[in-house]
Length: 132
Image (tube, rainbow, N blue to C red):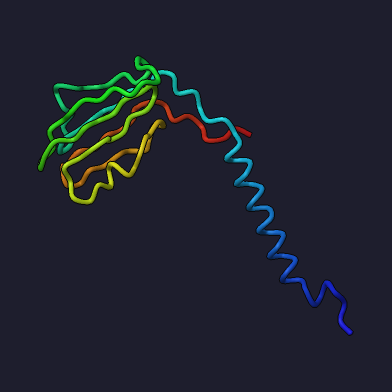
């Protein structure tokens, strides 16, 4: 008869690895995100910053959603802005991926509408993801 550990060594390694991965993901999700108190949003059309909007200071808004319209390549888009977040509320594009992206509130996560050639990016210091 073979000992338990020799017979089930692969199972023990697999369960230990999955447990460690689950714990790591739970800790990452529980850690506080960076303090993004002075964020700005940039809206570009074909790589050029839109003149009428320029940079939008996201810290100047309250929790109530304000909206405005911009003109893309194939039609109009409605942009929603609230404190430290921005989203596409409606778009004339066929796929609506930009609308389904939802609110973004961290630097480095753009909203892209390929049909309208619009890119919305939050500018700011992303900082470190984790400090040990």
